[in-house]
Length: 231
Image 1 (cartoon, rainbow, N blue to C red):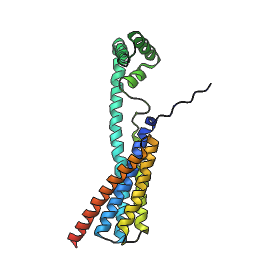
Image 2: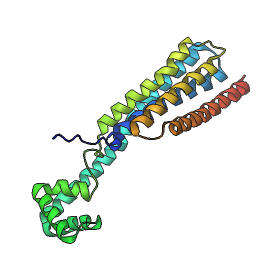
Image 3: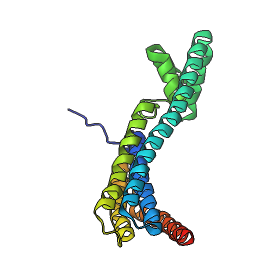
Image 4: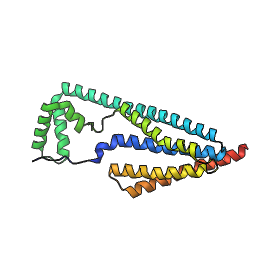
């Protein structure tokens, strides 16, 4: 008899977070830039240049920020593992009892907790302490390069839509075309992220559309008033 492993959404949380954040930021920030520029200076060359600059700068910024952030997490994890390895070498009995206490607090009897801790320690003591004491496992383990690449690619992909619209949309209706296409794709992104993460699709779509509208609306107002004051 074959048993199929259950599907858990938490297994996807690392790459899902980076990809969805990157795509949302790419779409929303680049659209906001284009809308702000279009409201202030309705010139296609200026608008396209603003979209291109926003896409490249944003993708690089997202990748660099994600790499630095996740690298810091990775450094902390490595330091904790080194300290745990040293403690296992210097006082294995204390560490064994510490591991057993963790299982006791989860509801396991004292005898069973000690037996489980002993068997796991014999199998791989550092892995047992990393997982149950430090909370480090293959799902949550920091992967800086993967996070940076995912952020860069997803941001660029999200920013590609307003960049293409800036080429094709009529200049006079540029703001409306940018807003309309962005809201549609924000809804699609919200639905995809909710479906992949196992959350409520309607709430995710409503949330992302509301805050997207707020961001684009404020940028359009800033661009409009700034353009008027300069002129």
